[in-house]
Length: 313
Image 1: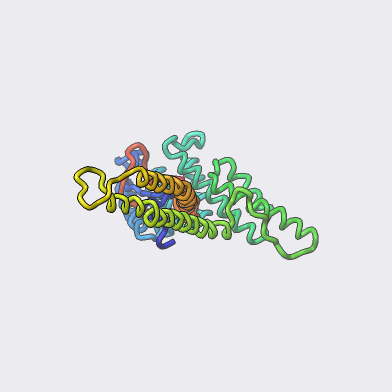
Image 2 (image 1 turned 60 degrees about the vertical axis):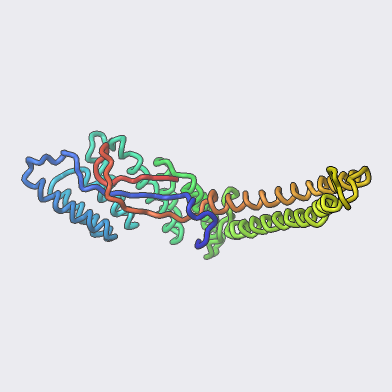
């Protein structure tokens, strides 16, 4: 959303990197090792150019040339980035199977689990849309094993409602699939759109109240005290000016009392404006916008081979 409040502080960034480096599972003594590296480098360039299908196919060819598990992991991430979840899950399964007992190395386990989890959620949503409720339910149940995030759990909750209501409609002989009730913990679009209106309105009202208080002070107590200072003499010699006396002191005190009476106005305006700022900060900086970004950078984590996800939620 253009013009977002404090846009420079926007949260929610997802970075993805792909490395040309491979660990020596496929030894450099293998005559096909150098050839596989060349194929992998070409695939990585395709990944950086946004050709994720071509990149995945390239990593697959590199693996056929020399069986280095890193190529399987790069396949998994390339296909995942290209939203080809069937291919991504196949590569994920082959990657796990390349290790003893199917145990993915600890450093890469989170990436592998997140691809397995997120792809199942994405595929389940497509199945629900096509009214394939049994298949969607199976994919959802499998996704739980991979630790869904809070955002994924909201999507799963929505799908579970759709599946339940879709089955009920089917049993009643209806062809419609009514929208599920919104998750109580999820903001609806209308609620989200009201937040900036409430925030800016409160900020404006609060600022207006404080401004009124400043005007009342400037035209009332401040003006009275300034007139007393101008019209009366406080130290001899006074010349033509009358001396400041008890009557003027009473006027001064009255003006000070009037100024104190304006304090509640400042407090009320400040509280309302602060509430508006709080709502705006929540809407623009804290509430999940549902948007994500992926940026590819040519860096490599020395403790892990191949493509690396840096997940931030």
